[in-house]
Image 1 (cartoon, rainbow, N blue to C red):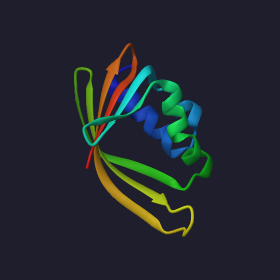
Image 2: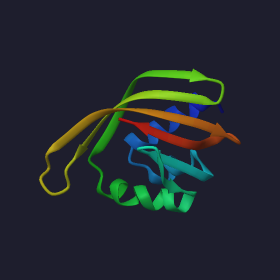
Image 3: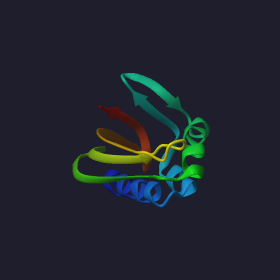
Amino acid sequence: MTVADLAARQLAAYNAHDLDAFVACYHPEVQVWMDGDVDVEGIEAFRLRYAAMFARGGFGASVPERIVHSTHCVDLEHWWRLDAETGERRQGTVLVHYTERDGLLHTVRFFD
C-alpha cells in the first residue's frame, strides 16, 4: 500500500468516525508533530488522543489537493468540527505531511 493509499484510507475512516479503521492505518511507533514538537508518540497514546473525539462525532475533512513523492504525502486538508458545548461549527485549513514506514503511516506533521 502506498503512502497515498494510506492517507486516503485514514481520511475515509476519519470521516466515517471509525476509530479502529483510522488507527489501523498508523505505525505502532507513530509520531504526531504539532507546532514543531512531538504531540503524540506511540499507537496507544495516538488511540487515546482521538478516542473521545471519535466517540462524540460531529467532525469531518476533505482533501482537495494531495502531493505524493516516494514515502511522503502532503495533503491540503479542509476540516470542520462541531463544538461539543455550543454546537457551533468550526472549520479551517491545514497542511498535513505523512511519512510511510513499514507499510503504515509513521510520522504526521501538521502545519497551520
